[in-house]
Amino acid sequence: MICTTTNSIEGKKITKYLGVVTGETIIGANIFKDFFASITDIVGGRSSAYEKVLKEAKDLAMSELQMRAMQLGGNAIVGIDLDYETIREGMLMVTASGTAVVIEG
Image (cartoon, rainbow, N blue to C red; front, side):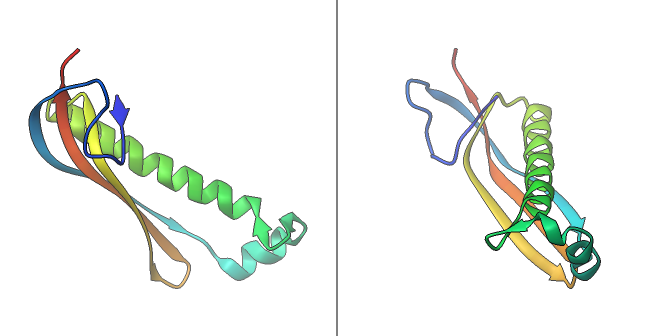
């Protein structure tokens, strides 16, 4: 499935717009516990452990987005937007939204 942040797909014609689809995931992170458990993981102000969790959350939200587009009969998603929000201390929500479409070919 083609997934893009743009409103069109170069070389492809959108034949049908199916509507807005979303995928969401919420991840928990106990910052203090995780910080002390992986203090050696922090290099140059970055934590690969947290980056891995964020990537997994984004991938899960994108998978849900694609599943919902397929349920509507779509074979592509345009105009994708990813949002990361803190919903309370230690909880992060990742939301992916876009427009499910049918493209030719």
